[in-house]
Length: 339
Image 1 (cartoon, helix red, strand yellow):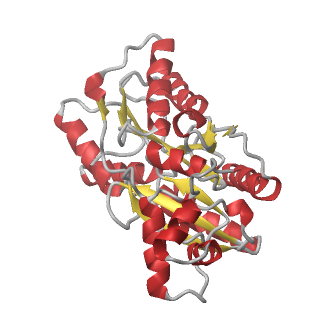
Image 2 (cartoon, one colour):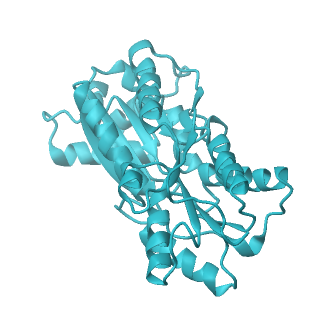
């Protein structure tokens, strides 16, 4: 309840436009009985007050919003995000839910139209959202699940894979096969999942008595086929090639394999290749790509379970759920012939 003599945000908006609070509530809910112009004016003013009505007080709309963040406007940053949008949308459709998807630039004031207008019951978020955005979602009491992120960073319900175990298994298996010069090609370490893989990679090397070699590590590559090709080019320019390369995701590994084959390397006899995510494409490559399976399907199932716990039961104590990962060995790695 607002303090005596002090108007609530809803009352402030109503007073500003000379209407009653129910009209404001209908406008914020996207009610077609309110004119488009008036609805936009009310929503804009509400946003200036940083006011978002409590979705629990509204009639369920059977609609979930997907918020996908990247460094560029209105685009999907990598193939993992595309897979997330496809699989999450299909899973929600199967439950009878409509889906709104919005691609957002990674900025602290990002706030999609479907939240401004109250058109969704809850949101699934992916792509390392800004902390300020996560805080605003919590304050607004919107049921939220952040995919492949941490409770510590976001303050929201999260699911994430246990990436350390799988990454360490890659390094240990390569070591067993006689590899000592093992390279790591990666996108930016600003993302928790990338940092976790990097630390696990270094820890595994030191556990085996090897010192991590900065000359065999390249970061801030595009998380795509082109990024993998660029990483291999940069690595080969530094001198003698490593006997094995670990890529941070499968599409980067595909690009790296293409670049190595173009340059005449025989895989895996000249260089072994391993990766992360274990997408379906891994089995179709030549040679098939060894990769860490992050239990994507289980993570998505856990994500929906936690989101609907908030929707159905009002459960509002954020938790983080971690899924198992495992290394799937395939023909892209082999014994080091240069050992």
